[in-house]
Image (cartoon, rainbow, N blue to C red; front, side, top):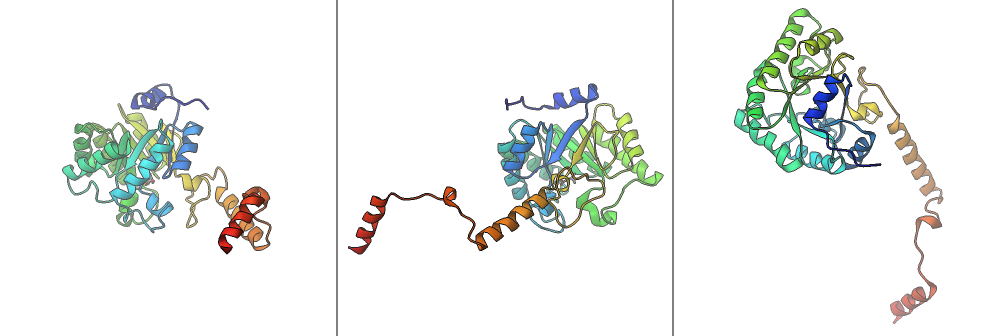
Length: 285
Ligand code: KIV
């Protein structure tokens, strides 16, 4: 496949202008990044969800900046042309503007990211402003924000009632005014997502489980392919049962080794008779 051109912020705004939805997926490793690049995905998020999907924690909170940088580097090697977003992990931006700028800078300098994403509403507008002022493109994340899942009362729909919906709409405005070029709405009602998308002036709105009216869609890769064993969110569509296929392959491997069916001659390398006889002589002497 011919190598495509690098996706830029301008390309993303062009898609919005042409009413072509933007495609965005999570990814955490080199081989998957390679496939996503080949498939023509516009954007990749190296999400701190890797704490759950790749590292087996129960939440995203234990994920460190070093974890994020290591995985972002691997993804960049596999997908050199996608628009790559580094997700700022818990406590990498909350303490101060300076902490936020330093860690956002690491994603750009050490991993070749094109932008960073951070969670939080109006209270994070100041952080977004600081990061954007340092020359780093920033994405806001509203609605269900997993780093605050305890405060939000679990993984559930946000902004169902008018008062909470207004808070989310106000936060979207504040983040846009602070300089966010994109906002992700996770698990809010479709009508709220539509309203925020229509009100956005110079900001791209992306949906994760928030309906079809945003400028594009994000899905968690592991949910798309049945690769996360602990639960399958209702909002995710399974596009292929890769987890099932891999499990069947593993079961076949166990059975074939156990029954002496693997390996076969095509799976190993022989040694010429004369070399083997010489080896035996050498071992004897
Ligand atoms: O970490 C992540 O993958 C995310 C998504 C849930 C949006 O932040």
